[in-house]
Length: 484
Image (cartoon, rainbow, N blue to C red; front, side, top):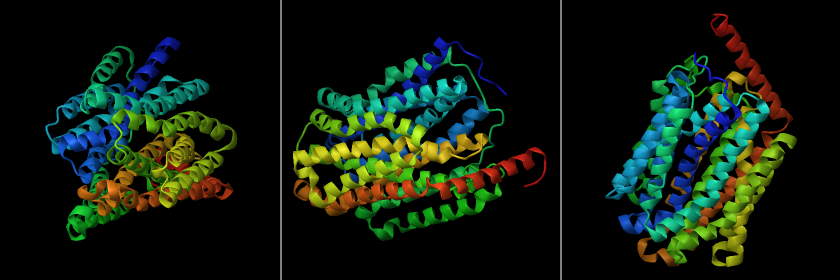
């Protein structure tokens, strides 16, 4: 076992800054990419499905590998895995910038995602083990969360400036110097650490997760263009993979996904809330970017400026949500989030908010408020009542749910849009074709609202306590060498 040595305050701050650099390039890459979608569509002659894949190829691989990367870091060394992630992500970014066609770009985005999966969960483990004082650790995690907010606010602007001045490929160039600097600083200043008892690999579970996520996403994205009969085999693979997970995982001592966690209502609620909220985010950004540039005819910079009414409230509300979770619990921020996201979706779906500057502005502000309040309670709700030894795994499932949600949001909303609009009638039919998508986003807000209210009350807390007692009793028996 390798423990993190005690570091000076200055060294701890440097480790935090290095970890935040990795988060910044991953988050900035995602938000800036959305603004570049229309330029990519023109430059690579891409369809709506092609644009969906440039986003979903990344989030899909990320969702599939997050838990594997986290457990691998615990087992062979967090610094080693973190550095490998920086190398792969930086190489993937360089390859994306030179992609000759859409197919190559999608493949290189998957390379990027393999590296990205080694960064965020491992960086959080490094931070958790570097900052041993609970109060100092809470402040460090607050800084970590603020970086996400900064990337959300800055991403559309940075992307707009780069796309308009240099071209869409320059979005990936930004990652190269930052990734190289983070790699060199990690090598010099971040100490190695491992978990006292790392989880064993679960290759069968990992393959089933990849099969489930991949086949489901492919079926959704390709259905509008290829038809139901073509995607039916992929839908069947998804169902079989899900059944395999439900049968196989409970039979393992250390499963990739511990299904016992879902007996906790707060944990199950947090998982579905994360999927719903991030599906809303993925679909919202996808529809907004295409509308602002392809229908309104704005350039990338002005489209990025129009994103600020969403990004700024998101940035400002995130720390407020964290304080509310600490003082009042997760219910109030989740209810606020659900109401704001629902009203935003209804504005677009029922009142064509995008056709008026005032209602477009209001819809963006409301969605920014809603999403700003939803992120902080998700992890808190997921780990509430869990034994300390299981909190990291529970948080990893919540992180995976976020990526899966964003993947499904882009897949479903893009498929709905593609089925209602063609290249010849794009501008004329976009608003009407997007209406079902906006109703889906309003439904995501309703899910956040209802589950936020139901899974954070006394009944839900009791179910979390019962689940924690069962998990702790199993751990005690296993530690004593008694078969569970």
